[in-house]
Image (cartoon, rainbow, N blue to C red; front, side, top):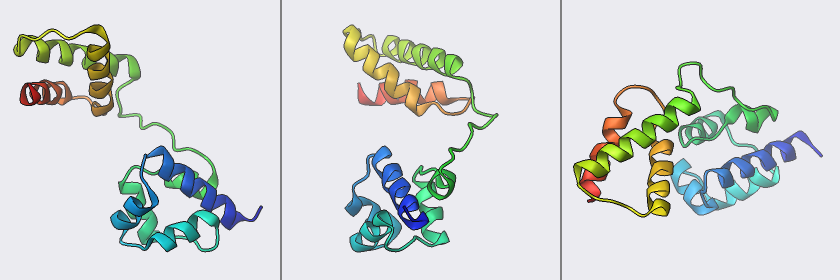
Length: 135
């Protein structure tokens, strides 16, 4: 398999991992759907500007180009602390609106909060505020 094809496969893998359709990605990158198809097949390669924009959407460009994943940033909080913060934020938010949820719905909310919390700081407060807004 040629390097362009390998890059194309990884490009497609990242797009799918992000849950973005070819059409949505084309719109976000200011490209045509045909270009996305060509990049994913390895017929052509995306330029640096496109890759930079794709990175801003959450794609791992190092992986696309080399097949190696980026390492987690040292500044990010670890998973245990992040989960604890998510649980505490959900509990506080539900308490603030005086609402109880079934266990399965509460678990879904905790997972969503976990996904929102990426850095230490006032992330928990943001989750509480979000719960209050949707209540």
